Length: 295
Image (tube, rainbow, N blue to C red; front, side):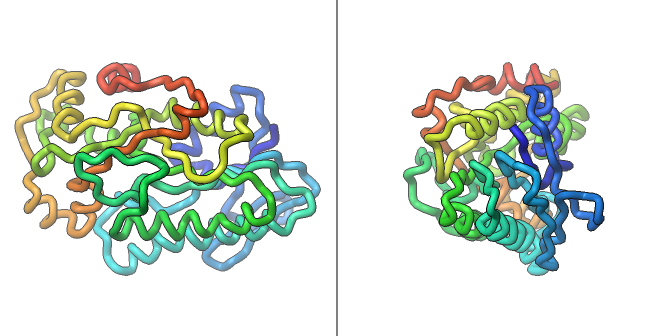
């Protein structure tokens, strides 16, 4: 299969590219540097894209978007986070819709932030949209992919949970303080974390590429979400370090601002209903075993 990937240099994109190459697929990368000899490049902020329609692309995977966790959320940064997802996705979807030689499937990024604060309530793809900034982003992000679906391309919106990898994301950020014995629960520790291993992320996306019956929203999460308390104690146990330095909610809000409530203190208890119904064979469902295999 010929597969075009945006965001191929990111945490998921790098791992996924290597994974798909090892499976025998041919990978094309949508670059951000304009060059006449490159078949695919784009400058989403400027509305510029080059897509060589003479190359048969079977699938497009859109993973581009500015990280939401790298620094406090100023109004300017929130605007950039939104635009990096929505503008690029819309540009790509509209381009695919106009092609004579359309891909068979368009897998486009989204996030479980769509569901907002869930508390202890279990949600899945049939649940209503939640409230808040991240829910708004997810809604607009998914709507931006609509032109591809309207053009008859099977379109999948992957609502991704917290991706666990030692090479980036939340887990990498936690490793140093936890190894120093400075880890602890955040807030009251009862908020749920819907996680997914980097290995399952790649496996799930491959499954979606190959399963023609799936379209629309799909949650990419483990079947076993855990509370922040459980995650904290499990990571401490795996690293053989104490976890006695909590981060109170008021301190988290003081340090991280609005981002604290959206990313650190909110609860997301999400189930991968559609993957379960379709028969996906999960690689990692036990948090402790997953962390030990990754670390």
